[in-house]
Length: 344
Image (tube, rainbow, N blue to C red; front, side, top):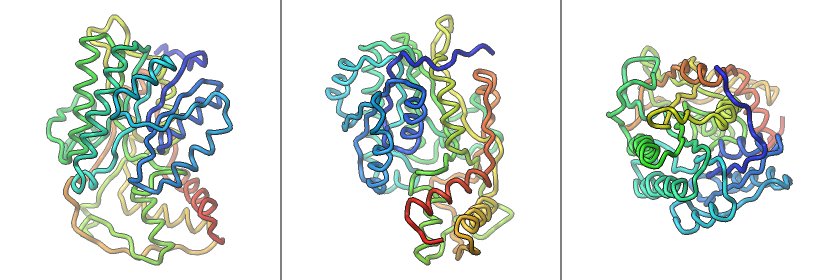
């Protein structure tokens, strides 16, 4: 393993810069003196105030430029590439969420297919050193074999969201093959942490606790068949991305395209995660926290387990996520109580 460290002389373009992962990555790169151009359409899929709050944290950095735009707008995207000439592009802009893709499929095609096609076209006409893009663990569908390995068969997605992410990997491979664009796809596994996405379960559970409402657990109340998730703390995700940025697939590869899992490699039962969240909130508030639990059938598009094999990533960049769910949730709970000004 001989990977190159971050190069602060390069221009980094992050799409979805006001999003959860985009914000944390931008913050880390700016802290190291990199020039970062951020794009985000600031849509209202979840609380826009949280997106503005993230951008406020980035605003003091002189090396940061923010552009409110949509990657589905090809002309606007090309103008950004023309003006800022990014060396490295990190595409994190996407319509997220498995369940929402059942309610509102159109936005997934617009953002995840058309938007990503525009990114590939921009990298074709304004060549870059490396395109890193977000895929998802959802591409594994209902695979029974665990842990999930990058070489596994992924032709049975169980949600439209998963289909769009699988499509991204195929499109990126084709563009790498045709136009020699060095590209790396990252299959993220349940990312959580401070300033996270309110549509994620741990955030929603916390909201419901403070609203005095029960939390819904989609496992039929069957603890033997409990859902397993490979929960991955945001700092681990960001470190993995950062280490990959200056390490595109080698030019001697027949096609300069790679896909890696980026997960904790240690799946937890959903009920264990919920108990850890109760413990973290108890610690943050200084009083006992216990959720009111309501058990429901598993939702269409959900999968029973996610579990990442991280061997390939470790081989490539010498890194494996380390943060325990207890530590990660403690940091989330501290942030939540502070951000929403909750009395302890």
